[in-house]
Amino acid sequence: MTAHPLFNRIAEGLSADGWFTVPGFVSREDAIAIRDEAVSLREEGEFRRAGIGKQGEFQYDKSIRGDEIHWVDESEAISPVKEYLNRIADLQDYLNQTCFLGLRDFESHFAVYPVGTRYARHADRFKNNPHRIVSSVLYLNPDWEEADGGQLVIYQEDGKEVSILPEAGKLVCFRSELEHEVLPCNRARYSMTGWFLDQPLGLTFL
Picture 1 (cartoon, rainbow, N blue to C red):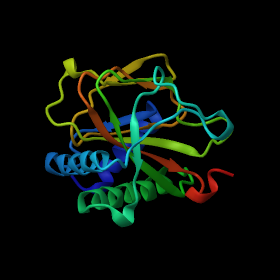
Picture 2 (spheres, helix red, strand yellow):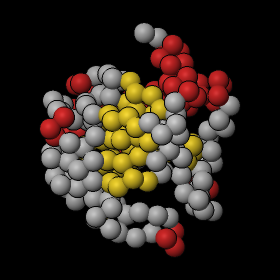
Picture 3 (cartoon, rainbow, N blue to C red):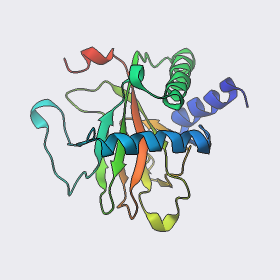
């Protein structure tokens, strides 16, 4: 499948339901390579506990959010990460051309949910900093099963819920205002999470 038909399906899903998922957006081998890089960075002490809220509302609360994160620096990234980010840049251009979203930048981090952690229901777009327009998650977990937990649950505007298993290579895109949660994990759960922004990254804190 060429890029445009796939990107068109993503755009249509975002428009119709607010979300879309693509199994095999990256190969299993690349997903494992990216996960192994994240594991190495965590072992080197590069991950930090994640918080909730922005600026003056920022806080830590493991009962609400239990993941650890490391922000991605593309200039220092391994080849599979750079290739993934290049495809994301192409997707951003396509969404701008077809959906007129005015996307101007993309930020991303590695995330790991240790065993027993979760992220309670929330939205990615902050009221006092509303620059996240589309959220994305690339999953990095080979051989993940339902019993491993960690499903992403998206709450659609029509009241329906969708549950997505965090399988290696799968990409999920959804509108950042949609509420969602990560269910408790029974295995360490790795992903590369990102946001398409309507402002250049350096201006989103203003």
